[in-house]
Image 1 (spheres, protein in one colour):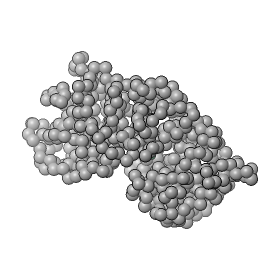
Image 2: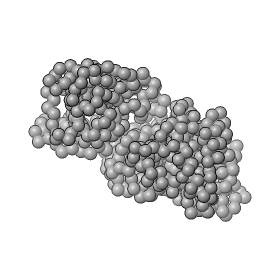
Image 3: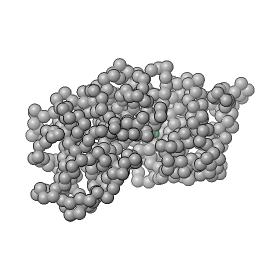
Image 4: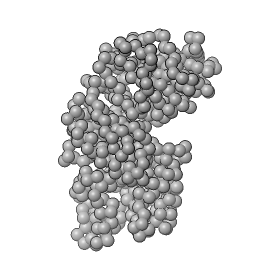
Length: 484
Ligand SMILES: [Zn+2]
């Protein structure tokens, strides 16, 4: 996630007929209404192995009930319509008091997220615009944690569409011609509860880049920016795929974008959401940096997961370092722009550095963005420089990423800072563990000026500039990292 500044009774059809094959583990019917746009009705038929139903445990940390804060009037019944008793155990985790193999859920989700404070912005949650509703699916779905497959049916007002990266499901044979319905298949709890959707009368554009089908869904006031965003996405996706060895973790991806009173972005499973205070322009590469950062979460954050918050500096900060590197490689930002961005990150880091370790800052992400993003960025630079110089230019941070992707990508195993240090040491041909002891586990300041100097850059009072006395070796290293 990233933030630049500071961030009915509907058509209720009581006869929900379960359809689909026996392999279907569940079916959701989600009904949006034009007249009551802040209420979404959800009906679900689910097979349950255990006794637990839950919402996504990730996010909404300021709410006692987690994402269940927005779930109203939950009713659970068995296939005969008999009530099944449930206890809410907190943070959106429910336990069925009565045993049932199949349950029917019925609830409403109230979309009033805009009435609350969101430390990382509303693009992490849900918001409404005149022509569309943005939904982070954390807020929509209650499901068994071991969900293997579900059919999600959206019932929509006329002329509305759902933009999603989920796989479309064939229309039902007995589909009601008068109903505006869209159907999708999801294959895990994570995919169901960590996606993002744009629902309404907005516009869509499909792009194919680096083997990935990207759906760009934007609100009306960003329609004119679509060509610029498409161009940036194509270049960014190409560079990111090369960085990780030529292979994207998914085949379908969605980018949702709208105007807002702040700029920021959030990474989701199978997509990202962005908001802009100003429409994307060529003169300002900040939005492209956000776009690249969130795109990189497709790998770091979603496919390659960290084991604990002590590695948050890597997930967010190293991602920021890579995003800057790719901005240069894709020809989106020139050297002046990059140095300005690097200087800003250093400023944010310097304000908080030396007080606590990067590892411990991961537990207080909202309060420690300067340390995690800025410090993590400069740890990324440190690792890249150490690997490149230790291996005499044979390896770089790119090899580290590809090893992480092979070792941890799309698996249940997650990496720790210690494992990153181990891989980096192997690649550098020397032990970088003591650098981790000092700057990740310990609270010493990363010697940023010394590492910038190795790239022929000088850290000055008003920012970062090329060092007038830099050597050819230093300039070669700089162009290897931040060259186009
Ligand atoms: Zn992020």
